[in-house]
Image (cartoon, rainbow, N blue to C red; front, side):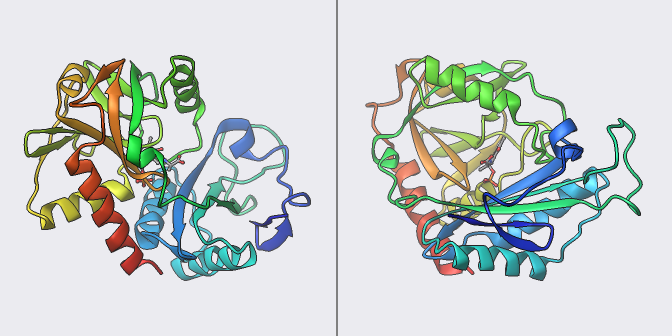
Length: 286
Ligand code: PDD
């Protein structure tokens, strides 16, 4: 049985509770982070904390925990649950006022709810999907306009994954005004010749922590990166494509809407970036 963290206490997953009035539950009024664990250590921890602070700030939720306190909780959960490879999920909501109300509660009387739990995923780094690549479909992006805030409003991404599943694919890329925004829970890239193309940061997409690291490593490896929007048709005609996220690292995409990219197997750029990312991230893990 897992040990989880709720508002200062380490509890069994079956005992831990959150109020029915919690605004995360009633209004998706909360933010989250997912940090991967390799060899029992946290990957890109400081990037996730920095983005958490930005998300909380954008929603006017006071950050209840310092970076060091968060690190302590992450490490404690990894240790108590004996996680070698997996994820730590963190969610902070605006808290649970005494009643349902659209108006934000007074932060003096309602403090944020903090929940963290681990997910053990043996084989996360050696994921067989990275050897075959994944298949995606294109869907409309009908999400709200502040996708740079990592909120827990994940209904449409969740529906998108189901649309992909029903279509016999693994995931979906969302398209707005003709251009790909991002994947349901990852950033999207194509490779044209020796150039990596990915949408620039804005409120249209989440600023991926894995994205930042991968673009840095790509630059260090002297790969050319164009941060510009691309269309789904460009993606279908690309030499390669891939996604990045804390849970998939760098994952090759081999098929879009039933059209195979290149020879239908993971391309050299995605494969190399995955290797570099895993190697460098393990070195820097804390
Ligand atoms: N998702 N874009 C979206 C919409 C995401 O939900 C995520 C992460 C990313 C990639 O961000 P990062 O590299 O920091 O993980 C991009 C997490 C993994 C999730 O919801 O499980």
